[in-house]
Amino acid sequence: MDNQGIGCACIQCIRTQNIGVAENLGQYNRLLSPGLHCLMWPITNIAGYLSLRIQQIDVMCETKTKDNVFVQIGVSIQYRVLAENAYDAWYRLSDPSGQIQAYVFDVVRSTVPRMELDAAFTSKKDIAFAVLEQLTNVMKDYGYEIMESLVTDIQPDDKVVRSMNEINASKRLKEAAMYKAEADKIRQVKAAEAEAEARYLSGVGIARQRRAIVQGIQTSVNEFSENVEGTTPKDVMDILLLSQYLDTISAIGANNLLLVHEPITVSELQKQLGTSFLDNSNNGLKQEATSFLEKARLSQLT
Image (cartoon, rainbow, N blue to C red; front, side, top):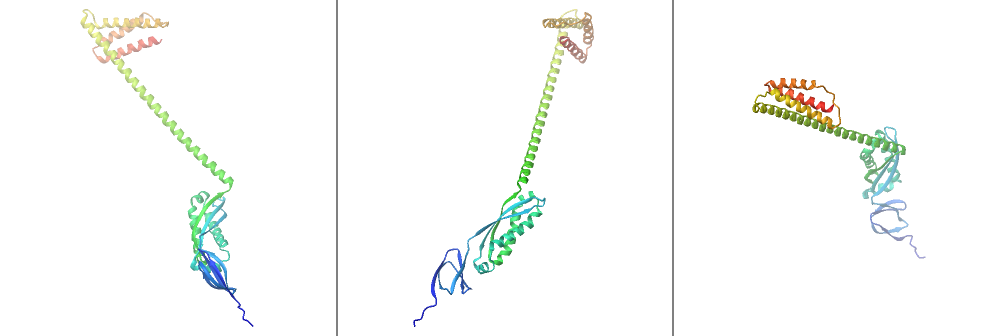
């Protein structure tokens, strides 16, 4: 009777960035590196393959914040199998994705409730770091290396989002109103300063004009008194006053205006100006001349 073989050779190929787990009759035998392998099947077979590539799992966790706002937090975990710990990765964990997801839930639900909603948005790195630290310490014992932990999304309820947008819009409107009010204030202040400066300059011009008029009258009176014999400053002022009075009446008549006056008005003005010009003091002359001009101007406005 011919002897028959009880086994045959089997050639298996392990792809790059993969590890094969070989077993002898159900018992762990060795790890197969990438390449071509010859196995004695069915005694030796490949129980499974482990990928050494970086893998990613996305976890969406619902929790609430310190101010009792429920949010959906999306966390992405990037991990890979450690080649030297492939035995633990294959035999110690039956569901690595479920294990990672459970730890993400635990860390997120213990971290976020200590933060308010606004702080949660600004503390995404803190949440991601807490998840990374926890998973690194745990999954290393199972042959997995956690490469990165990212908080990809924080989604409050739609009503909360609308409320936040309204609050933000109100703040911006308030700031815009404040800036507009400040601009109006500056505009009004500058306008008031410009008006005050204009009035000041106008007053300076009027004062210089009056001073020039008084000085001119004084010079004319003095020259006329010196050049014409037998005349006194009082006579000159009487003539000047009369001419000014007639000019005023002429201007009023040209504009179809009626001026109520009496002849005694001229005499009173003559007495006042005569008394002032008899005084040798220049200050008295200027003050009385200014009074005369003001009265003449008021007569034109009547």
